[in-house]
Length: 199
Image 1 (cartoon, rainbow, N blue to C red):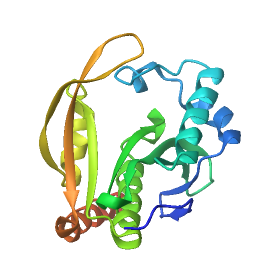
Image 2 (cartoon, rainbow, N blue to C red):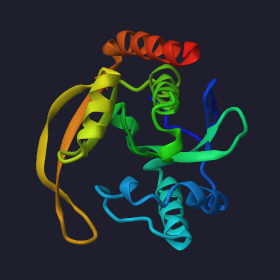
Image 3 (cartoon, rainbow, N blue to C red):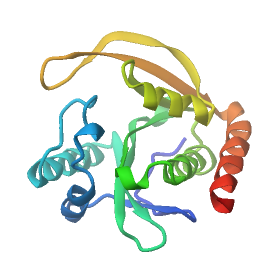
């Protein structure tokens, strides 16, 4: 596996563009809905919070452990969310897809399905990953359902694995897709996207 470098990943519904500090204000316009951050390590409640969120993501990128993207609507290039490769470990041929959020108006539009397809294609077909991980808090039923719908396999729960900024212990559920499972997962995602195209 090669280490990921900033790249633009284009689809018909969304385009994933390398995250930049200048994106923070536009992301704040669509990303301050409290429900987006209820089960996250820290809430994003203001433009300043979003600027700090982006700054932290870019700091992780500079250390080589993360590659963050802004999610843009393909039709008009308006930013509608963010996602990233994280916990990048080329020596173990694995990485994680996470820290994904979408503006409420972009949910259930196919944007998340296509974003995941673009990221998985890049991870498996370009970077040569053998394992792509997803994790979410046990309380986040919506996220767990969405990850299973991708075709990822649930592998177990790490109890009290992370601590939120407010001191709340977070039990995290781990899922993964292996390279040998990717062709079936890709076919499933392509079929799901086709339903959005005909809707």
